[in-house]
Length: 509
Image (cartoon, rainbow, N blue to C red; front, side, top):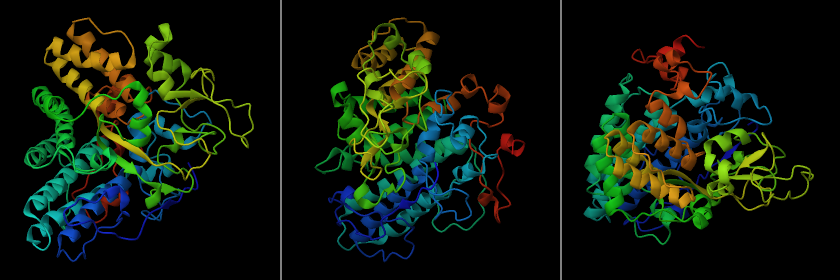
């Protein structure tokens, strides 16, 4: 995880006034544009593109350009993988000390991990959205009123999304709904943040479209849409234990949205190209726009080795024994078709100077050297050749979250229906037990199987106060004191008497 330099586009191409150009063909804007002219519809479109660009950077993590004092170089895809890593499922086969420290929740002791505690880019996203919401209403030149309303709704959605994502990482966080705010903001309770997210979603859902008129699915689902806002609202309501509200929001996606499960044969379109009806909201990273690093390439290439990248061994993996526990139907009779889509065994006996072959048996490599291959790229051993989506919300997530909400409401039949849609796609037997508690556990297990490596597992466990059950380095008391959340960076305390540290991290430096 060393010697990474992020390359980012610096040329600004503003979008068409009506927002009909493909954002994924535009160079990203990587700084808050406080000096923007704010005169035309194109200015507004460019400012919104900037906000989404900053949010993509926020999810991938800070670089040395962002925090010059850091001891590491580049970005590691912090808030993607860290949504999985502390679940107890992952190992570092090459014994990388940084990853191991993360698994063990040593997020302050390991100084290379300190940039992960910094929420700066989330609040830059929020500030950019606030500037849009302050300035765009006055723009009248080349800007249709219906598109203006839609754009303002997108900005409110993204502002809420940045708060939502940050709250899952840090728990209590500041709420900032004012442009150019200079007042020292303290942390608000997580529940208040989630209620704000729900309120913002309710305000924009009537305005946002299900899809934008783009020729590609990846372009439309990389924007703020009705489906994305409904999914965000439902997730926030699950944190608030408002299971009826979550179920209702998810049902709207199922009943009214243009989404469907992709077939197993379409998983490469889903995970490598983001071009299926299953994708609801994604962050699409484009190498043509400089959204890669010269060490890892796409943010997900740290899962991969030769033949996909020129790395000779694995930094991150799920051990064979744990794969067989998670995908127990595969262990029993080989029936879970996801295993061969999510994992590959590589012939490590072949020199790293050659293209290594992939074995037919995905679990052939033994306990510690099975490659997590859910997200792939051409087998060219290059880090710089990976375009690709990072799913935030997809339809299988919606079905399983709806199943969980309904099971907690003791609506067993409804829960079984949506659970079994995902299981049938995977080729495993339908679940038929109708006892509430076992059903809830099975749904959570199915979320782990289906969404593994997509940064949901730890957030699910923290939401339920159950991370300590799966991570041996976190006790039940630790979790009650906030160990499931990230510590707050020292930077947040500068000139801010209202900032406080999470209780657990006050005593675990």
